[in-house]
Image (cartoon, rainbow, N blue to C red; front, side):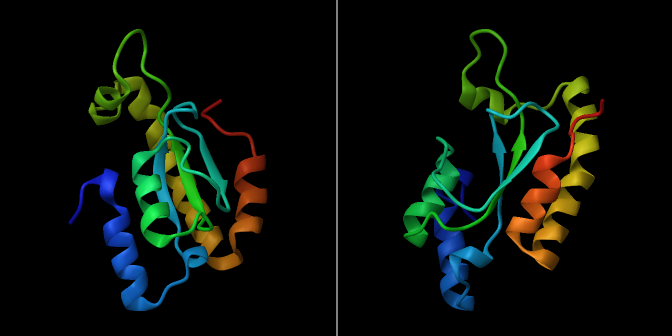
Length: 131
């Protein structure tokens, strides 16, 4: 078990043991830049400031792995981002997350069945949120 900010240690160890290419690893992570209740699939790229993703990039030696970003929004007012990501969701945020969990699971299943490009086309294009 590792802390999220050093999750690259566990991911790299599993990838090496099972001989899994980075492109075959889907990383699911929170994202401050997406509103609560939104998801976004990416085929690869930088860490976007997410320390856990940066750890995975560093340990795998590659940015070429897909990720499913789950929006948690930005903290209100002067709250520190680190404290924000560790706190419990508000009732309103929890309601949004209850809506997005099945959508995230569907996106993961689409990635497994059809690959990242098709899953991105389906889940990044459709309207999101509870409406």
